[in-house]
Image (cartoon, rainbow, N blue to C red; front, side, top):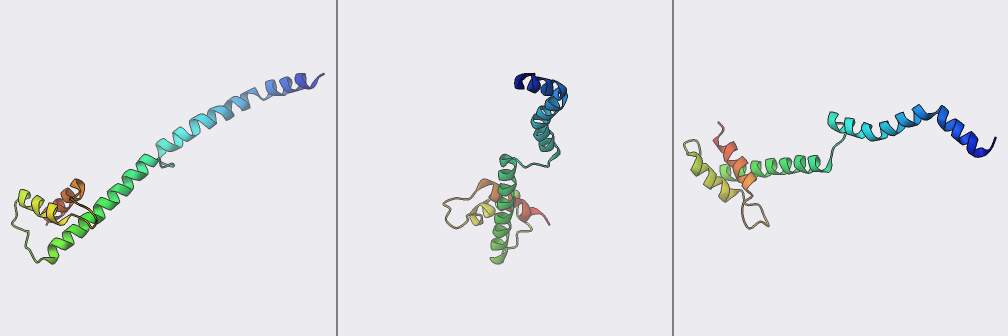
Length: 110
């Protein structure tokens, strides 16, 4: 029996194991990603962006409270304008929309 025949015989004997191995390599990452055991780069960027917006909104709220203004009687549009003014972070030319929105929501919650 030649080496090639021996290899073919071993492959035939282990064909189901080889197929299961290949299927596991393909399907395994898909299943673990759906379950949440893996984090894709897009999901990670979204989580980081959400955390940054939340932190900057807290800075905005504290800056407004430090001015001593009572925002309890403000309408939403006034809160939005106030938040837009104070949500500009250092080294930014204008306020980030998400930060201004989150800040105005936090100001409106009592």
